Every structure is written in structure tokens, then in C-alpha cells.
Image (cartoon, rainbow, N blue to C red; front, side):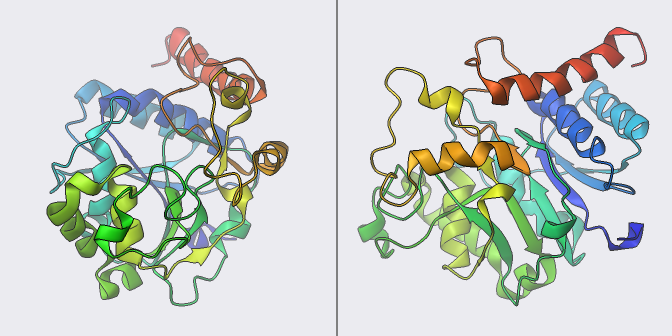
Length: 291
């Protein structure tokens, strides 16, 4: 693929997530096939230090960077480990316009494989492509939408994780995806357990392209080894053994949930070790005084 053919990578951050963004960029740049990457970063009140840090790492890694200051329209609640910057995802269309296809990545992901096959995936008229959420695979299994019946949602319908989304922004705009998501939160914010992800699932109305699990593989093995880990509700739809077997072949590894690998208390295991290789590389550059 030529430089002009590579879909931009879109991320959303505030100052709490600048370091993970730099680690994600390092993982993207470590793939030899990734040349001429463009990254569009929506941010909320990012400090000058944060902006300079992101720009420094983008420049040294050969990533073309565009920063978009955005004030999210939503003020819905979030859980303790989550920043309100998650709602910036609902502003992607307005912030960067209908640029065609973009790949949205949560910054608690790292890229371990060539993204070009994903970027070439046709969406066939759907606004987005995503992977079924391994812990909340369908409505009625997991914590998403405990009031699904009251909301008029069908039990058992596939539910996607919004941490990795291949998006056709022109189709999103034409179908009013982001507007519908914001309306849902305005009217039913008290029913949202997974924030903007719930809203996007409602707005997409099951009209989304199913992507292979390797494009959004949860790092579950360190968590599953901890006492009290539960996977009961999801097991009939996403067996834990299958999900654990996915990890070695992950092209995008996602550290979803409150346990984050850049923190000292992250459980031991191979996913954390892989992450910390990139984390140390970023830290070494900064420690050596080049930032």
C-alpha cells in the first residue's frame, strides 16, 4: 500500500493516557510494513507538556500527527478507571469530517501484526467493522444493558467492543451514527454500563461488519489467573479457552478493563511482558534526555 492508501489511525486521549498513546505509537512503528502512518488524535484539555510529548514520539517514529482539541458534548458517567475522554469517540465525525475509512484504536492497545489486511477489509455499506466483545458477547450476557428489555433491545443480539473500529466516516455521517449515539446517552444515560460503547451498539442497530478476533484480542490470561475471575455469562458465546488460545496470534492486543499494563500492579504473564518491552523503549528515550 502506498502512503496515500493507508487509512489514518484515530485515537482519543486526555493527559491520563498520553503515556499509553506513546506506547501504542511505538508498537505501530515496530511493524516493518507500517510506513507512512498517519495518526489523528482527538484530545480533551491536553496540556502543553502532553502535546509536546506526543509530538516528539510521533516525529521520532516517523508518524504523521494531527491533534484535534475537542470538547465532548456528552457528560454521562464513567467508571473509576475510565476517563471521560471515552466520549470523544462520539465526536470523531464532527472533529475530522468524512475522510473515508479510518481505524479507531483505544490507547490501551498495542499492535503486534501488519494492519494492512484490516485496513483493506470492505465494510460493504456498514458504518463500522468491529469484533464481538469477548466479555459481553451478546445483549443479556455480561454487564452491558441490564435493562435491555426496558430499552426494547433484543436479547442475544451480538454486541461489539468499541476499542477497535474500522469506520467509514461518510457512511457514519449519512446514517447519523454519532448523533444517534449521543441521543441515546442523553435519553438513557442511566442505562449505560459501558458508556459510549453501549451508545454505539444501539446506534449501529446490529448493522456492523464482524471482524476476526485477532483484530481485537483481549489480554485475558493474566486476569483469568487471578482469584475470583468470572466468565460465566459469556462462556456459552465466547469460551474462555478459545479466547486464551487467541492471544499468541493477536494482531491487536487489548488491555481492556481496570487492570492496565503500564501500572506496577498489573498481573504477571506474557501480555504484560510484551507491553513492557514497548514501555521500556519509550521510557529509555525519555530517560536519555531526548524528550
